[in-house]
Each structure stands twice: as structure tokens, then as C-alpha cells.
Image (cartoon, rainbow, N blue to C red; front, side, top):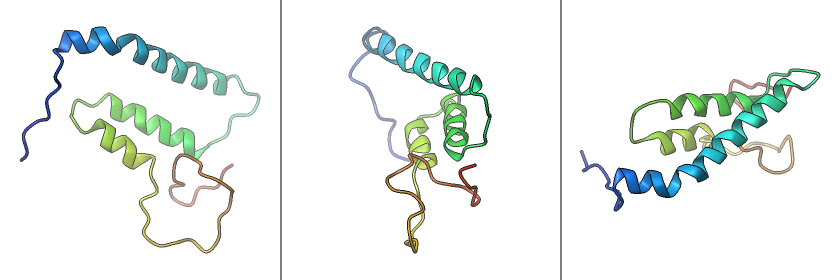
Length: 101
């Protein structure tokens, strides 16, 4: 097994340098989810399902969180599709043939 990657900063230095930036990102996600909860219609959406899966990964204690989240948000299929259902990227793959309800 390869050695654990190291950070040139001490734990305290890393927290002091990056905490406020990431605090803001967490608040942005919380505000986004609150906004969705206030929508008149609540719909299942594969992108929100993926976001919730990512939040669960964030709570895990391991060094592979970024890679695991990237895999959740990436289309890992190898075969090309016949035609696109939408223009542009959605940011998360559709799982189990869920439609954008």
C-alpha cells in the first residue's frame, strides 16, 4: 500500500487557512437544499440524490472522499449512447434509468 499523502501544513495551519472558505461552501449547500424544500412541488431528481450521496461520503473517515465523490458525480459508462436526451452536462449520471421527474 502506498504511503499516506502528507500535507506541508500542520493541522492547525490548514484549518486556519481554509476553514472560512469551506464553511461558506457548506452554508451554500445548506441554503440550496433549504430552497429546494421550499419549492411548491417536490420532485425526485437524480442530481439531488447524487448530492445527498456525496454528503454521506463527506461524513466517512477515510482519505478517499474526493475520489469517491468524483466517482458518484461521474458517468463511468464505457459505451457511447445513441443520442443525447439533453444538451450539455447535468453534473451527475442518471442511475437506474431514472427519468428527470
